[in-house]
Amino acid sequence: MFANVALLWFVACPDPAAELRRGVSIDPERTTDFMGRAFPDADVTAIGSSDLATAVDGPDNRVFAAHYGPLAVLAGTSLHTADPHELTAYLRAVDSGHEQLLLSVDPATSTGCFARWQRGELQRGFVGTPTIIQTDFGLPYPFEGPYWAGEHPAPVAVGRDPLSLPFHPADLAEAAHRAWVGFRFTHPELADGALPDPTDPDPTSLPVTVYRVGPDDGRDHLIETSVSLNGAARITEPIAPVGDERPTEQLEPVGGATERPGPISRYFGFRGRL
Image 1 (cartoon, one colour):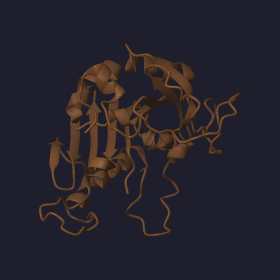
Image 2: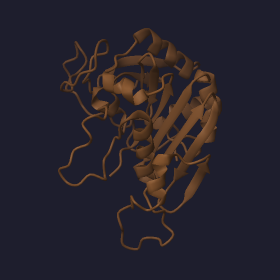
Image 3: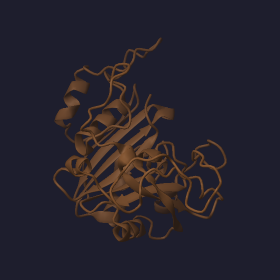
């Protein structure tokens, strides 16, 4: 029902959604510098280009990054966190002068998380499951009102806990992402056959560079490339990297689906992984 996705936006413009709607392209030099600050002591290798939608369900040793000029994005399942506070020191080290936005949704644990920092200080953070609020820091934003008022109830399940929240936290987290960045990854609120708002930015049209964190795992050729690394964002069919005739496959976690601490948590010491 919800996408397995985690990403951080670094914002230096008043309206990131408007920037994305106008179309963006990667600044390669600034993206390289951005990754150097995000992983100063890690072995990081650029292995190809893709789009932001492919960050969904990506393996822990892949990071998807792009610097678009007025905003930048860092995505990967290793960014999952149970407490936005633990990211604060890391964000200050990467870029303390602007605004940072977090979306983290883990369907395996039915957990939704969103957070917003301004100049290195956490302003709003929420983490929860359908029955437990783990973090509720700061004042709610106006878009949260209808959720707390019960206007977006989670699907009713047999044996549902009577103390369940009046919404699914993953739904609220994606609503925060749409309010701040302009789009969702999933749309459970739409009726069968309905389409998202056509003015919402499409994550499949947002180019990113794919990085491997750590040693070569022999899977660098398994990249879904659907946008150009340089130039305007556009949608094409997934292709294999140039010069590689092996068939394109969907990225999967190395060694199976067993969860383990992601690369960011390993290098910077916070828990990662719910």
